[in-house]
Amino acid sequence: MANPVLVATWPFGLAAVRVGSEVLTDGGTAMAAAIAAVSHTEADPEVDSVGYGGLPNSAGVVQLDAAVMDGRTGHAGAVGALEGILHAVQVAEAVMRDGRHVFLVGSGAKRFALEHGFQEQDLLTENSRNWFKEFQRTGIKKDFFDTIGVLALDTHGDLATACTTSGLAGKMPGRVGDSPLIGGGLYADNEAGAAAATGVGEDILKICGSFLVVELMRQGRSPQEACQEVVRRCIRHQQRETSTQCCFIACNRQGEIGGASTRKGFQYAVWKGEQDSLIEAPFFGGEF
Image (cartoon, rainbow, N blue to C red; front, side):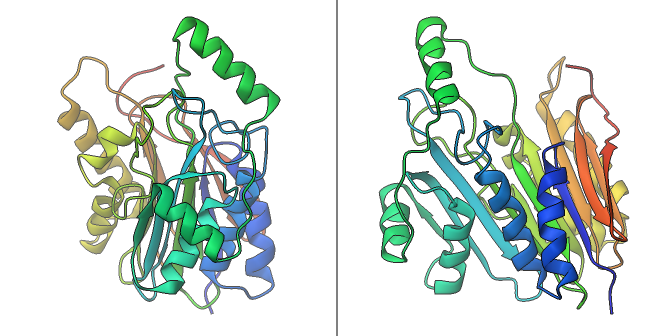
């Protein structure tokens, strides 16, 4: 029997892994734990980059992206530019379980959600409305990229990953970053490991970041080594004087974990051995 592990991006990931840990200690699956963890963040109005209270796009609309992947089966589901549905990650799971498709977007994703019993609601809060008014006045976007991504290893030795985000604040309507794209924002394969990404989605997408982390683990790299190599790849590929923030977390079936970022400031949460902690990731580019 494996020792269960949870890894999540950013400091608010601590609350997420605590919720997910309850699922794992009750014998739940890695997928159930990962979804429970990110669903908690989706419902937290204090996290303005995810779910309820997420900052809207340039039209004042909250559009959510989410995905899940099961490392045991290889099955995956995702939604992009989903409006008016709080738990985008649960819709992504429903897409996976439905099995006809992997990725639904926009009005099609919303229609699917409503047909599967999800309730429509206003995702704007007073804070996010006030931010949009200021954005309309100044045009200044918020320079943070706080996707919640979670990796889970259950007692059966199975891996799963889930992520969800409201994306770049003030983005173009219809913009989709790396988060819901399998291989970009997340990837899981029991044979090698699981990984998730956060940061500037456009740059993560260009190197298939999470898939690359997992493939490096398949070749024998540790989770930490794999994350660091992909961060270096990100920096080389950007070819800029100052790299954008791209961050990765990883976990293998042995319960080894890793994390790294292009720039200073990335922290990730870990629950392991019935204890949780926040880890400052090594960075290989510059400071904010």
